[in-house]
Image (tube, rainbow, N blue to C red; front, side, top):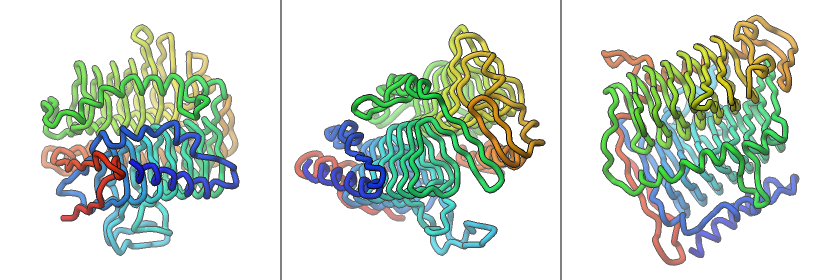
Length: 471
């Protein structure tokens, strides 16, 4: 295991060099996180379909329990129980930026170098014109259940349950449970619990109170995550172990137009409608998935009813709730109703990323509302929800509780609406019986998995031999 420990030290040194101005030492987190014996315990797996270009190469890397799809390259990195999802990588000839047309001269590849990704979701959709053929993650450490979504990173530390979305980051620290979608960030340090969405036309800002973040996603004296959300996820983790120990699992009862990933957990009286996508590492228990709905990676849907055309983004958690048609639940949101205190959210609502709803009494949120922040009771709706129509007609400055908005509200909500439609279309929610408008729910039905094993003993224990998989 000597070489694996040397690789780990190399990653720490490279990331620390990028974060030198902050005097931030990533070893404090990494040395309390990595259990070397586990890196030799689990295989990694590479998905193969007839719809995605095949090219997977790696050297001097450890990838225990991780999933890869699409063109991927991994070098000098440790990737543990992470999902590297390249199903929307751009193809040769596609245009990256229509305002300043930049055609790709080759298929796009996810390139991970000198990084440690721990239980992280990576989903491409790069907008970086500097590397149009590469979606890059370099010299970056990403903690438990963070999301790297369409965001290239270099020299960064991403805290537990954080999300960086559709942007580029250079030498940045993103605090626990923060969500950032704000163009390019250079040498920025973001506090925990910040929601920052910014474009040329608007800015949306929200920051959780420190005691709330400490309660739901904090860190202990060893810089490891703690709190109610982390405890909720950790309690479910052992169920996934069976998926890696069993080769053949009984098929899940689902329509022919729907895809249930072999590495998803399906329990209880779960019902799956037409054109539904259940991604790997999703967790469903007594869930009703209406037609066209999806449960993305690291999402949990428990004792809940999704009426239809619902998007549950990466890490979204829905417990004891009824979610109306075409309502979006954002990244890492925690919607926690109780058995005797159900949560009901109307149709066509937008639940902002990293929203926490934790109630002890029944609560109903009306149709077509924007929802954000921390909600525990009916009174909180006055400061943490607004009709979407309000934003559609608003231009200026507005504040409500801890939320601040400035700019063109119509552009803000249209951006979310367009993105929701893109997700539904890409997932095949509108596919008909003639197989028009196919998407991930249909293409994901025909997927095979190549399993790859690390060295089991010796100095290279936990590392994988250099391999390249091509057509």
